[in-house]
Length: 309
Image (cartoon, rainbow, N blue to C red):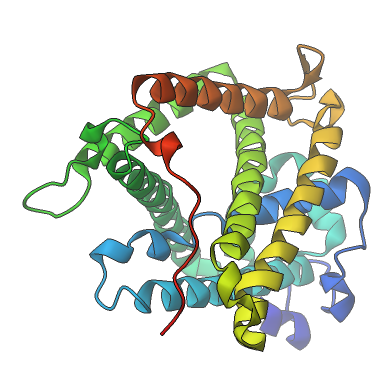
């Protein structure tokens, strides 16, 4: 697509790419926070390699490197595709498809690739399969870890003898995802889109907590040099601050039903915010129930990473 833009052989109103497209402050208000939330959701799942530490050779190094390289590959891929789509199709064409942006790849595939458009469709199908795995893998491994620390019932920590994977938690995550998708999809397509936006709020929340926890856990190492200070302290805390700001701004935007995909009020608020509050409330209830049943995890005292040798 980019080649055809510069060669002048495109069939639409092409636009030459510009560095200004990378300016995050080109749009403000709900457009900016919505875009940032979309970015949070897009990056979610690419840390799956880190969740597979116990199942990886060289667990001290390989998962972390895989997570970093995954993020680099993701950033390059998303930027390249975004530049290619906007440059080839032009803003007028894309604005005219605002109500059907989900199938923009299908619409442009034949325009750009001709008879080879099946390659793009195959790539999208492969991506969809990968996305389901990046949903199941981190959640099931998190449930496994929580079960081992007695934050969840011990059954979630069951390991399949032949495959060496957490079978019980995997099936629970899979079943929950299927039920949630079917129920929300039966409500409407817009409700499904709103549920994804709501999920972005929860992702931003726990990523922000993760950044703070990283700095607290490694606090004894932060003054050992610029590397530990930046990677274990300043970087995670800066990311947490940005996510907290995004969370606050997004809650304000999503309180307005007009900013939701469904554009209808649920209990006087936007549907994504209502869904996010419902999921957070359900999680709090389950946590309190589990704490009453077995409080071992909550009696643990906060720790600190041991000094590096």
